[in-house]
Image (cartoon, rainbow, N blue to C red):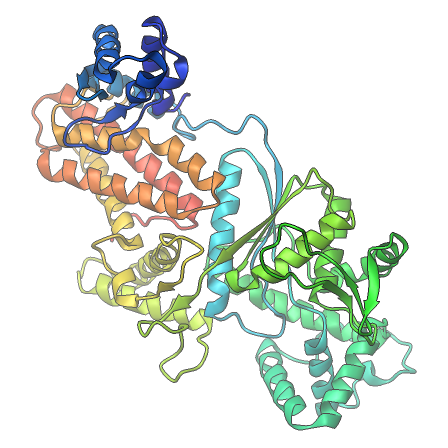
Amino acid sequence: MKKILDLISAEVTKAFTECGYDEKYGKVTLSNRPDLCEYQCNGAMAAAKEYKKAPFLIADEVAAKLSGSAMFSLAESVKPGFLNLKLDNAYLAGYLQEMKNDPKRFGCETDKNPRLIMLDYGGPNVAKPLHVGHLRSAVIGESIKRLGRFLGHNMIGDVHLGDWGLQMGLIITELRERKPNLPYFDEHYEGSYPEEAPFTITELEEIYPTASAKSKEQASYKEAAMQATYELQQGRRGYQALLAHILNVSVTDLKRNYENLNVSFDLWKGESDAQPFIPDMVQKMKDDGYAYISEGALVVDVKEETDTKEIPPCMILKSDGASLYNTTDLATFVWRMKDYHPDEIIYIVDKRQELYFTQVFRCAKKTGIVGAGTELKFLGFGTMNGKDGKPFKTREGGVMRLESLLSEINEEMYKKISDNHTMDEAEARKTAKIVGLSAVKYGDLSNQASKDYIFDIDRFTSFEGNTGPYILYTIVRIKSILAKYKALGKTAEGAKILPAKSESEKGLMLELTGFAAAMEAAFADAAPHRVCAYIYGLANALNHFYHETKILTEEDETVQAGYICLLELTRGVLETCIDVLGFSAPERM
């Protein structure tokens, strides 16, 4: 099903060409003066120069040609040469009926050239709890993945765990101090290692910060941790078994926390999975003449002549031969290209890492790790700040755990829902969790990803304004009306959307036509905030229509059934959009 603007542009283009003008002048846009018209075409202004003719004369001709079109109720020329357009109500109703006849996609077509796109988002470190700093990557990445899937692309999400490097050595060292008799530390042990981990997730989350603090105070401790890291990376059997335990315990907990965010990953790969590819990758870089020694380290030059600022070389190995994040990220490209051959790889990470990814991307392309057919995209996001404008913290000034943030939001929503005294505690708790998630996700996603934003719990949990709860309240309002209509023993089965009887009804109908365009634009720009902007406008239009229209008391059964059909379409579009954003609506609030 074609987008409404494409259909309108085609009709206006046809009029331009029939009047003897080039088709390029027939493009139509949404009106920037909605008080005057719904759509506009400024083509006559541009055509005037080419045809050496007053623009209003060109516009007059085109408007006259459009006067017989069933698409428009208004097609007028306005000096100095604008075309003002309004859709015919019957045509608009017919378009929406087509949308309604497609209850899964509402007229939004899948991409004719689907791509295999890998998303690198999440990026938590094992043995550490998720904190608020992990929110944006997870929420934005999940939404882009869902958007891509809706549009027919093969989207593969990878959590990309931080499970390598010194942090592993620190955990092993601290564990050895606490439990030196475990078989993992006996170099001569040849038996099978225990299936159960020698620690719980709670213990593991305490071990790492303790070890980290010790390493900063005791040089010998840090040296031991570095040695443990080296032995782990060289394949020491006991340490590899410990790493497996750390991963198992950590990932189990991470999955639980991500599930609370309604975020999932297709791959639970980490830096350690890239290790087997490093030796051959490094050797090839040397053999091909890309990698060379600089100040003891192995590097690859990635600067380009067009650079306006200095781009340092990409370091591949440190002077002691140890690998870095660069190394594992490049080796990750190796296995992704080998196993998946993606058309595109998108990294959803903090925007402050842009220089780093510029280096890594250029190195991957220059050395041939990633071919010309694969696009590498950096999607940098801004910081989530508190009301003081600084990175979001707990009341005590520490980094807040993501679990604690969600719990705080859920509690706030529970209080608001309980105040209505319409639900028992169990239902109120369940509903609070659903609405709370919308508050967190919409609060984040409604902002342009690259910008910093203020995480304001009071505003985000409000049932009014541009918030998740407001969107859900609108959906619940529609559900309530549909349920009452059904309870009256009525059905709209076989009924159709009718031409609008009021300005508010037409306003809602016009908003609905923008669904496909909003979804496509949001994905094309990797910008979920476009979906948020669309459904906020749609929710406002629905509520305006609701307040001005007597739906359930409408005496004309045919008109009433038409209203119900319109509401059913609105609910479907809103629910599809919030699913793409990663949350759902309750039955009541």
